[in-house]
Length: 263
Ligand SMILES: Nc1ncnc2c1ncn2[C@@H]1O[C@H](COP(=O)(O)OP(=O)(O)O)[C@@H](O)[C@H]1O
Ligand SMILES: Cc1ncc(COP(=O)(O)OP(=O)(O)O)c(N)n1
Image 1: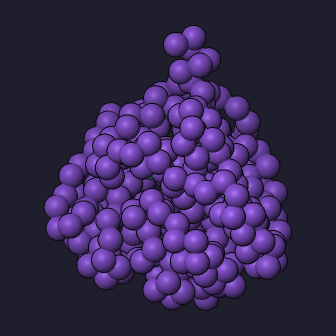
Image 2: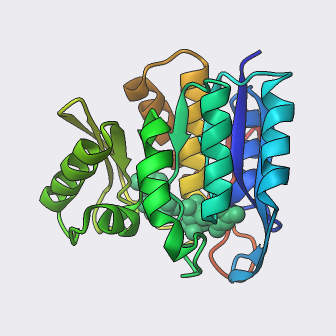
C-alpha cells in the first residue's frame, strides 16, 4: 500500500487542514499519516484561535514517521512560523523526503492569517526549493510574484517568475478568478491548463488542501506531475459538484462522494 504524509494544521471542523488531507488520502486508497504543526479552532465561518505546537514536537513527530513508515509522498500545508519551517526543512533534508507537494497556505478564505508575516523569507528560500510542486491560489501567487493577477496572461507571467526564482514546478489555482475554474501548471518552461466548469457551489472550504493532497496521492502511486494534477483536478471537481451543504458559512466538500453515491 502506498503511504502519504501530511504536514499541516488541524481544522477541528473537518473541512480543511489535516482532516481534509486524511479524508482525501483515504478516498484514494492511500495509507495516510500526519504531522501536526498547529491546532486551529475554526469552522465554516472563520478561524477563531490558533495554538502553535512547539518546533521540537513537530520535529519529534517527523522523526517518528521517517524512522518507521517512510512516506512515498509528502504534502505540506499550514506551517505557521519560522521555527516550525526550520524544523521541517531540517528533517525533510535529513530523511531525503521525495515527492513533496507544498500548498503555500497563507490566508484562509475567511481572511484569517495562517502564516506569520516574518517567516515568508524562510518559506520562500528554504522550504519552497524542497518541493516537487507548489500550489498557490491567486492571492498567494500575487504575494510570491509581486504581480497583480486578473487575467490568464497575468497567471502565466506570475507562474514564470515564481518558477524561475525557486527553480521548480508550480500550479496556480484559478478558484479565485472568474469564468471556468482554470489551473495553470508551469514546469520546465512549459505550460498546461487544467480546466473545468465553475460549479455554482459556495461551499469550497478546504479545496486547496484537498487538491494538493490528491496530487501527492498521484505522485505516491508513481504518476508524473502532469498526470497527478489531472487526476486531482477531476477528483476536486467531483467533490465540489457533490454539493454537500453543512454549516452556516463556507461549507466543506464531500471527500467521499464516490462512496456516498454508491459507486
Ligand atoms: N466553484 C468552483 N468550481 C470548480 N472548481 C473550483 C471552484 N472553486 C475552486 N475550484 C478548484 O478548486 C481547486 C482549489 O482552488 P482554489 O479555490 O483557488 O484554492 P484555495 O482553496 O487554496 O484558495 C482548483 O482546482 C480550482 O480550480
Ligand atoms: C488548518 C488549515 N489549513 C489550511 C486552511 C486553508 O485551506 P484551503 O484549502 O487552502 O483554503 P480555504 O479552506 O481557506 O478555502 C485552513 N482553513 N485551515
